[in-house]
Length: 477
Image 1 (spheres, rainbow, N blue to C red):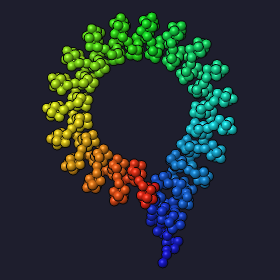
Image 2 (cartoon, rainbow, N blue to C red; image 1 turned 60 degrees about the horizontal axis):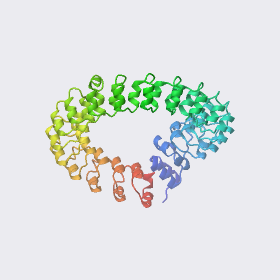
Image 3 (cartoon, rainbow, N blue to C red; image 1 turned 45 degrees about the vertical axis):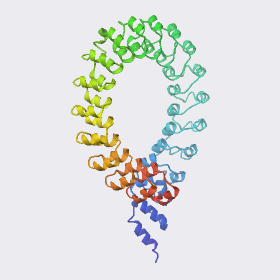
Image 4 (tube, rainbow, N blue to C red; image 1 turned 120 degrees about the horizontal axis):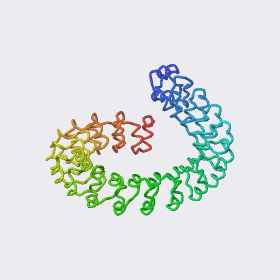
């Protein structure tokens, strides 16, 4: 005997979320809002609406829904009194027809800043839009800006792509500092408006020729010129009393001859950090670099082991251990100088060397950066960092099986290549979200572990047939 309507309603009261929705749709009854969790409502709003669920309730987090859910116009019409319109106007992509229909509800400041609007639409709603946001966020033509010159915010307009002819016409409106920051200006234009432009911004952001800088040497900002313009050594020599020597040393490419000529003007830390120097050159100017620059030399210059040996009491051994390529013989010789954490992390070490210095190396970094054999890991199983071994070393399934109580199964599931038989064997150890995302799984395997896999990850990462998708549509939804 078939069940009646009241029985179906009674059964539905004991179901929740997707089970409730599918049941009610199958027996053609209207679900109640109380059968659904907040999270389910937020992610399935349109389905619930189409199923006839009464959504006119203030118990729903409308702000979050307005931010995350794409809603149909009919749904918005029904729920317009409940929606968070500022959030909706900010986070949803809205058509101009939609905005037009709901113009008394939308937040026009958010519409002006976050929606892509045509100039015709802005013109139609010129008394609604926020002109500061329009000027800041919308791409406007020069003709449109000219038409609404008394509405727009000229500081933001000055950031729009403008022609020099347009800037000339509206020279009294534009923000000249912003113009010099954001527009690409010709030298002829800068010369014409030399009394209007912001010379610090020009020096910093415009590409200037040396002839131009020479002609306007009393206008430009020489610190910014030294830092941001590409200067020849002849030009620097000509204006040696104008340039900022610290910025010259850090930002310009200098020859050894030039450095030698101006050795007493230079910032030697910048020279040793940014210029490519030979060891002979470093020895020649040892007296200049002794006080300030050995840290930069140790990190930035390519040094031979003989040079490091000669200046072992001057070099920065942290920098040497991290940035220089060192032989195991050299590391052995200077075992009491080197930084063993950096040696373990940045130098390429053999297993025999690691074995020799097992009490010196950092085993966490060894486990991350050195390529280790399974025999070696087995030998030093009480030293290695197993979470790092599990993530960064390539391990065979037999090895993982042997050390199943040592390995990090989250990392194993995410980074190791595992067979389905192996996953099946260790199903209670595996991290199923990572398995679903990072391993290649057959549909047969997914079907077998239907209640273990992460279906969101399965739908995102696995290659599924149409028949499989139809079979498991309730899970994939």
